[in-house]
Image (cartoon, rainbow, N blue to C red; front, top):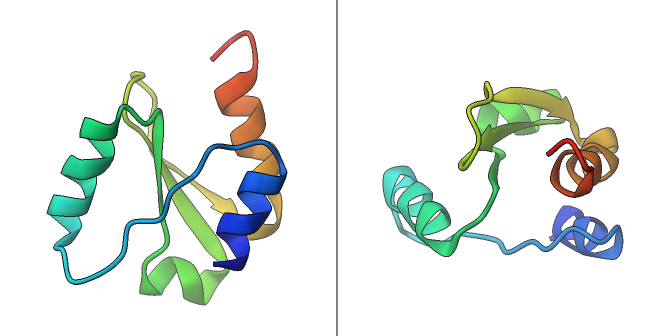
Length: 83
């Protein structure tokens, strides 16, 4: 929840998918929402203090980013002229 608040404070529109839905169902919902990227924080990512960023609209590779640089990196990715 803290990361979600930080993302929103940095100007990134963000929603959190949680509950008892499968990962596949959550990814389908993210895609259907029109989101540009999905930010995935599973057990492995949480242990490494990282997030996987999966582009949903662009032909880019999925990347892993440290949580402390995630807000700035997402802002650049989503809102730069090159995105």
